[in-house]
Length: 238
Image (cartoon, rainbow, N blue to C red; front, side, top):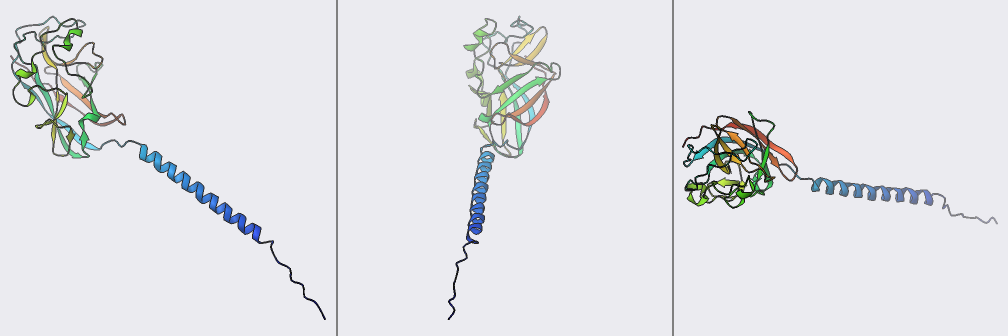
């Protein structure tokens, strides 16, 4: 009588387990990489895509242009120094013609001009508009900027450089308009100019009437440009 002997075949188990472990490890690594990539892409700030153009350079109010000022020095004009005049009712109107909504608190304007392309300035709602109080640091002159409460209409008592028109909001959607206010009007050596306080607080940036103001609208979060353009500065009379 023959006895049959049965032997268990375990030799194939180890390779199968090894392959399965490799697959599990690969899947885990892929999931980690995918999650990391998703987190990185989600953390990146998206620059708004919008079509925004300057449509009008508005000049209102009256200015005593017969009073020629001496300037702050370095050829920089000082404000017209008649305190009875209102602060400059001067602003640029921008139109949002399409694309993403834009928060005015999250953008800044970089200005220059065709006549003086090397002279630049940045204006944003993080800057403090010029008043008689803070003008004292500019060449020692503390008067002449004007009283914003004397301005009538939309610009009455304006307190931030950029605001939606006509309700002074900050979120601008397609079809909306917003403005960038200027600090003051000046006359120096026969030239009338529109002026903004530079963000370093030392000397103002100015553009003469008849020149062309160039601008770039920058998204502050990504530091990328949304759009750029230029607009002519109109003549200013008394």
